Image (cartoon, rainbow, N blue to C red; front, side, top):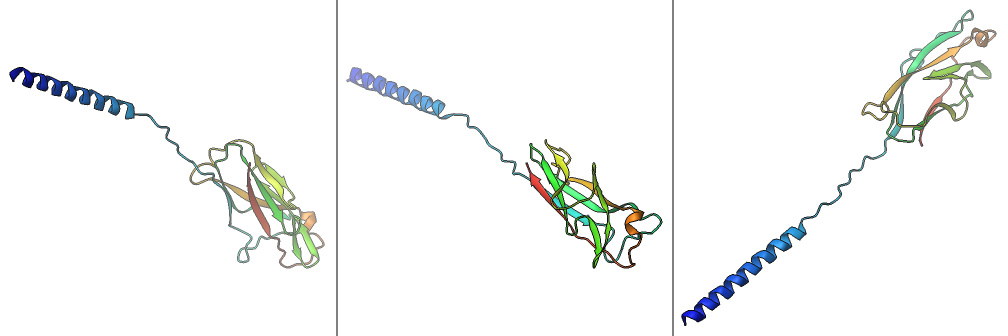
Amino acid sequence: MLSTSLRQISTRALLTLGLTVGAMTAFTSAVKAEEVFVNNPATGSVAFTQTAGAAGSKLGVTLASGLASTKIGDLNVKSNSAAGYTVKATSANAGKFLQGANEIAYTMQFAAFNAVIGTDTVIEDVSLLNTDAASVSGLTRDVSVTVANTAVQGKPSGDYTDTVTFAFVTK
């Protein structure tokens, strides 16, 4: 009886040992490294803040000098596109301030752009990531206009207007 009890104890011990090893093997094989993904969503926008030239702060032009380059607002661009972006401007009056049938031509300045704007005129074309534009606050630059004195001469007095729309395109 003693030999039967020892045999049962050693069988139980082996069985217990086998279960312990099997449990450790199962635990070890369950540990696996997984890839972790983070998504940085695309950001792209343009916002214009007018600082001069509104109804309450009209720009003054003169017959003698027209209007020297004058800041009319700030254009803020936000983009985290690795391929860059394009900013376009569209003038409702093809780059002219209008008063009825009378017109005063002007040029717009923004970054390296300095020309008359028409429809979908590219005023900035960036072909890679601009880290300033990819920041939380984005990239803000001045928007200015210039009127040559010859564009004012022979025109009647009064208010002349144009509407400019800025658009942003991600590449």
